Structure formats: C-alpha cells, structure tokens
Amino acid sequence: MRAVTIQEGGGLTVAEHPDPEPGAGEILVRVRAAGLNGADLQQRAGRYPAPPGWPQDIPGLEFAGEVAATGPGATRFTTGDRVMGIVGGGGQAELVVTHERAVMPVPDALSWEQAGGFPEVFLTAHDAIVTQAGLRPGERLLVNGAAGGVGTAAVQLARIVGAAPIASVRHPELHDGVRALGAAHVVVPDDVADLGPFHVVLELVGAPNLRTDLSGLATGGRIVVIGVGAGAKTEINLLALMGSRGRILGSTLRARPLEEKALVTRRVEHEVLPLVDDGRVVVPIDATFPLAQAVAAYDHFAAGGKLGKIVLTV
Ligand SMILES: NC(=O)c1ccc[n+]([C@@H]2O[C@H](COP(=O)([O-])OP(=O)(O)OC[C@H]3O[C@@H](n4cnc5c(N)ncnc54)[C@H](OP(=O)(O)O)[C@@H]3O)[C@@H](O)[C@H]2O)c1
Image (tube, rainbow, N blue to C red; front, side, top):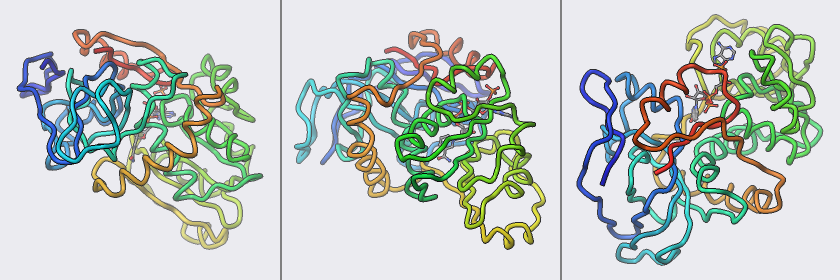
C-alpha cells in the first residue's frame, strides 16, 4: 500500500509499505479520506511519536473508508461497510487495520472528505466539553481557537447541548463562518474578557490564555485544556481558582487504551451521529488534497487561517 511517510530529518513523502492484515477483532479498511491534525505536524517534527503499537513513520490520527476484510471474531461490520474512526497513527494510508470497536458507521449525509475529517475533532470535542467538563443546558462555553477542527465541532456540540457557545477566533474573516455554525458571539481574543462569565472554557490555544480563562470563570466553572500550541507553561493565580471554586482539567486522546477510545467512540456514535444524519451537525472542510500532495496539505495546515478541516483523499 501507499502511505504518507515521515523520513529521517522530518521530510515527507508517499512511499510503499507492506499491506497490514487484520488480527482478532480487527478490520482492514480501504481508506478513502484521512484528516490532518496538529499532532501530525508535531510528529513530523519529531516532537510527538506515535504510541507503542502504531506505525511510527506513517502519520494520521483519523480516517474514513470501506471495510475490505474482517479478522477472526470481528462481527460488527461486513465488507463494503462505510466506517470512520481514530487511530494512534497510520491513518494517512491506502489501508488501515484497527479494532472494530474503535470505529463507527459513516452517516449517509457525510461525503468521504467530511467523514475523513470527523472522528478526531468530534471525539475530542465531545469528550472534553460533554463527558469531562459536563457542559449543561443554559451554560456558557468559551471556545478559544474556535475556527479550527476541534473548535468548529465544539461550537456545534454546545448548541446541541443547549449551551451558548462563545467563540474566540483571531482571524476576523473567519468570524462569519464560525457564527454560521451556531456561535452566540464570535470575537477576537482581546475581546473575550468582555463576554464572561463562562461556565466551561475549552482551551485549544494554550498557556497565554489561562489568566483570562481564570478571571472569566463562573462560579463552579471548568477549564479543559486540550491544546498548547501557543505554549504550555504559565503562572496562574490559585486564589482566583479557589474564589470561583473552579477546576482545571487536561486531556489527550491519542494514547488512551482501546477500551477508552471505544467508549468515547460509542458516545459520539449514539449522541452525535443521528444529528449528522438530519443535518444539524456539519463538518466544515477548508481544503482537500490527494494523498500524493501530502506536502502541500501539511504546508496549508501549518499556514493557519483555515475554517475547519484539511483532508487527504486517498
Ligand atoms: N488533547 C487532545 O486529545 C487533542 C486532540 C485533538 C487536538 N488537540 C490539539 O488541540 C488544538 C486544536 O486542535 P484543532 O484540530 O482544532 O487544530 P486546528 O484546526 O489547527 O485549530 C487551531 C485553532 O487555534 C487557533 N490558534 C492557534 N494559535 C493561536 C493563537 N496563538 N492565538 C489565537 N488562536 C490561535 C488557530 O488559528 P490560526 O488558524 O489563526 O492559527 C486555529 O483556528 C491543537 O493544538 C491540537 O494539537 C488535542
């Protein structure tokens, strides 16, 4: 099979690899589309190796495609079924092997491109704001970095929960696009402080925002730190945290064991996929590139200023 391949020194190419084979409980998927994520760029730069058991030189945390074969004891899907899911690595390839419990069916409403860009960001956003932060109807959610993949998912999920999403987006030309996804307010980061208090903050940018996150936190508020692209270290005032009786949570998805990934996947399968089918949840795609143009896709991702996802078509 052909796959995006990280070369020594951080180069990127598309190279031949042996076809993987499904083991017990696993399925072989003929990949049609695979989304890009910040983690792929970090892995390419040598800063974020894949967890043990996943390909180290093939990036890609998510994919969508057709079941091509099933391993012994795998009974959930049959050949030809449309599936999508997260993997610890290796998604940006013509073939992927994964456990049948780690995937979900692709709703008819999603194109291959949309399906390839769905799993990582919707699972991350749902797990962070619904499962971990316990976002409730009537609450106000601040999403910092709301124009990206996780942010555009979180804005939509907050609306479905019955909460009010407030989006911080540094590029004004993307504000209308984020508003169209259901954001109650879309502001540049400097204006966030005027819009509090926030019951939940989804922090996708990192440490520079923590002071504002804390000062704008409602009583009993929760800050969930998911991304630290702008920095991981800062000084915070613990008195402010105590005063709001707040909580700061942090999370990663990639290194979790199969059992936890399957659970996160089931929650989204049951709670979000029906809303995709009736058009209440969409997957904004900023750009698609064929697998052979992976380098251009990575460059586009690194340039920023996008709305939603960048997806490789396979
Ligand atoms: N913990 C986990 O399990 C997990 C899972 C998925 C993703 N993540 C991380 O979460 C973050 C968001 O993921 P994503 O898929 O949504 O990434 P993304 O599509 O690249 O979106 C990131 C967004 O944050 C904005 N941003 C970045 N730096 C900023 C800054 N200094 N000030 C203001 N806005 C800034 C970007 O704006 P520009 O376009 O202007 O740069 C972009 O809109 C990434 O760091 C990613 O690695 C973590």
